[in-house]
Image 1 (tube, rainbow, N blue to C red):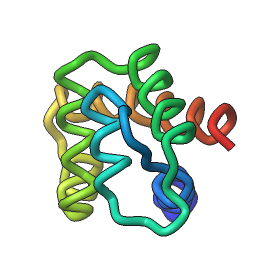
Image 2 (tube, helix red, strand yellow):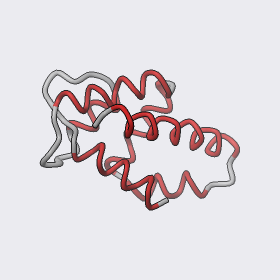
Image 3 (cartoon, rainbow, N blue to C red):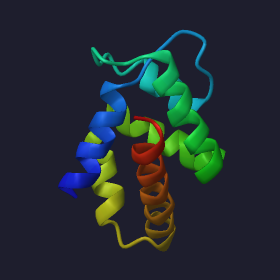
Length: 100
């Protein structure tokens, strides 16, 4: 869990920039992190496009504003949440490796 949030924090820290499109890219840009930049947020969005559905992206983007929501989804016994979390972990892993 700690590694997952560290990875998300690193992605967030290295994110933001004008002209970034998509749910995850915009959330990345709006995160207010000092190291946020357009290339990183664009990369995060590309990884999201490759890994997550649009619905998944909307849910994942909401984690930027409400980190507790991520924790609630992760701990949920709902099969839909469990399936989402599997896809989300794939996304964060790819983004960590590709968007440095």
